[in-house]
Image (tube, rainbow, N blue to C red; front, side, top):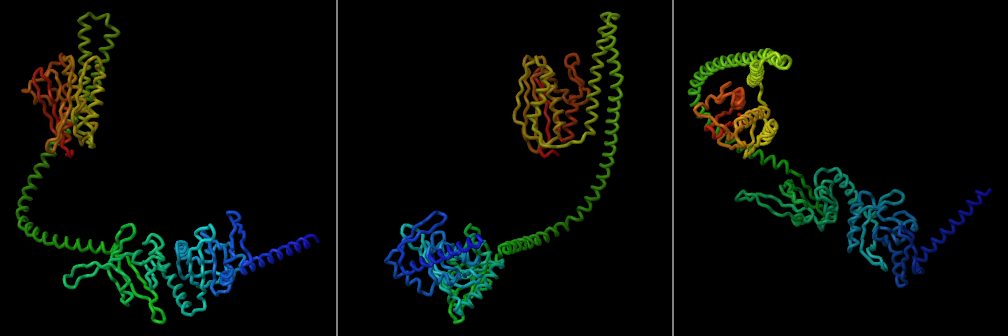
Length: 580
């Protein structure tokens, strides 16, 4: 049976290794070993055991406290037999393990703080260790820094078992209850020892401190200012809180205070504090609780402000009511007159709306009905010129061309008349318009129709305009088209567009260096079909400026013109700044 023989050989080898380990441990305890090699993640490390330390190692092995030497990462380099007995763990398994594995999870943050402080000097504290069998023992830890050969940040650990001490058992039982309360409490609860060092803190206390407040002095971790009222003056007085009154047995209940956290934010809190005494009547420490009332405080201040405002408004309303009472009779009379005037205006408005609708309907019908016969005349005339021109003499061809030209003019006239009639029904959709951009677009479009002419466009300051962009485009198209048409006799046409803000309206103008007109007849310019120049000199229908006037008036604005014969003309239009 080869398997049985192999198992027997492995058993013999294991027994040999155990015996060798026990002999090594015995030699270490007796001081018979000068150095040992420990294998770890960083490879093998050699630690010397000086012969002069022989008596100290015997002493450590015989004391009733657990003892260990820890590395900077918490690994155990050396432990005495008593510590192994406390943790119910074989000594050879304890060596090279991490000491934090034996600390209960609830006390690991406290141990990390003790260990960190111990590496820098010395620290002490109480917590619970977990045994290999799953048990838990209360202990008192004492940690201090030490040097071992060339290795820095070594820590010497002394562990005192508190299990057999009845007083400590009661304190630890209460500690377990307090930990459960602190873990579930929503308020800030802090427990300090008799020196004012924080030993327990609720979850809310950790959040408020923004870190681990354990082992910090309470006055430094939680600077609190108590607000009291002076008896004589009744004014609030601020006093910095310290634990000294608690040492004399004083108790604070529901005191209003302020707390400034590390980030600089200030909280309003209700403050409770009192001493903790042991069974023998001795001072064991202090307990402090903070309830955040910042939101409640702000609400109270807001309520007081609203109450004061309400009282002021009440007085003001009383005075206003008296004034309104005296005005009621006058308003009653004015109301009756206003109702009569309103009825009259409404009737006039209805008549005006009916007249406008009839006029728009008539204009639309006329212009729409004329388009078909005009196109027929124009089409047949062109056919005669194209297909039967050889049958006509020169005078006949000239007269037929006059018919074509006039029908073209008539077609344009009906188109303008349709456009003018549609303006009355077109809704105004107001947005902020960039008049400079619209001017540039219109000018480039019009200039392209006569590329041989020389133009000079000057665009000055143009304040933003709240209007219908499409309608404003038609205004600029008609005004710029007018300027281009009446400057055709100039070598270089100079056109200037600018504006300014005055009062409650924006005023814009289009100026040219063209033929101009006699201002005596300026009032006729904005009427449909009114012309101040001969058709032979300047073509057009006489509807363009009427369209400009109609659009500007739909925006609540006004139009006018200034000019002198042969010295150019300036056309103005003004639109309210707020669009109404």
